[in-house]
Amino acid sequence: MSNPRNQSGLGGVVYFLGLVAAALYFTFASVQGDFGLFNRVRIDAEAEALRAERDRLAEDLAVLRNKTHRLSDEYLDLDLLDEQARSVLGLVRGDEVVLR
Image (cartoon, rainbow, N blue to C red; front, side, top):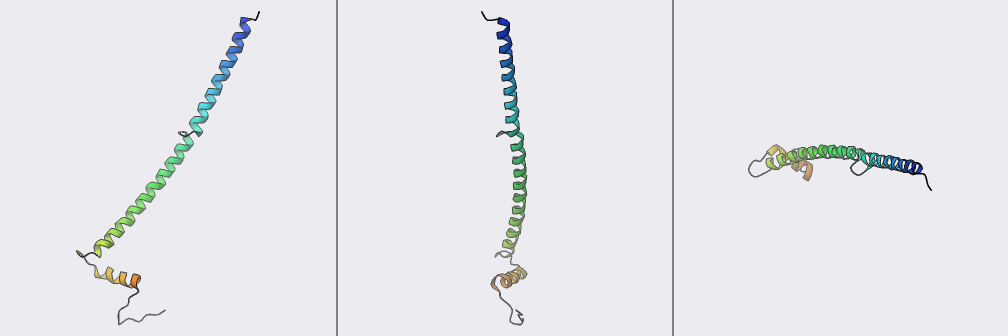
């Protein structure tokens, strides 16, 4: 007949190895997994980069809205109109000399 002492010792080793394996798995998952620390750091960095891009685009939008308002029928900025006609259309006044 088998010794009950040996069976409980083998069962304890198997139980202990199971606990160690579970601990290793959960440790790995908490660091490398989909919701792990490394993924969290990457997501935070990506979010910060997107916030910076959003702020830059908001500034660009404010500049474009200002130019649009200054060229609208309600408020016409003649200096801006002259600047845009020169740069976009390549227009010059009759009393100017163009050097190329």
